[in-house]
Image (cartoon, rainbow, N blue to C red):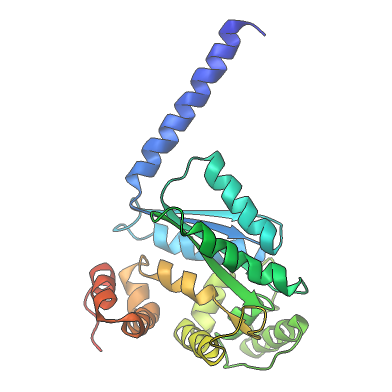
Length: 265
């Protein structure tokens, strides 16, 4: 290969890196979401991302990158670390979305432990875990009911199929492209968040593997919901955010109001 060809390729690579860096600098709020699955979790968060991108206020300020990993537990956070290093990411929130399924408790708990260790290194870049025990379908079913029975994941899918049939909206599929829209329209995200928080509170002091059934997917949903268009916030997520803010304290509540406007309690 001639030096000229190598030089042209190097220049092109440098140009792409420069353009990406310029693009990132435009984004004040940055989220990198690493999903265990190739379809279910990415499809859900892509639906949420699409609505945020429809909001002219935050469209150019919020970066959401969704990475389907096709990997489980500890391999997900390893993928996230590799991605951060490879792309020279220095700020933002790194979220790992994964299920317990039948994986060992030490691996399932290990993701949160590794995230806590990484968070000691850089304050501008923090790792978060949005786990579900046993599966993300537990988060989905909370949109329809308060559920605390620690059943096998197949029972959660059966519940969703029965609910979808009752609503006459077809059958639940793990690769549904419109799963976020379906849950938003036919489910109740406000109650889902409330139920998820209540279940976690009841399991306080337990490890993720010991807390079953349970999920922390709602924490990522609430974090991103503040960037939704105002009409969706008003109808669906405003009360969620207000409740979560009050739960955390008045100081954070004022920050939420700055994002979504005045909230009347």
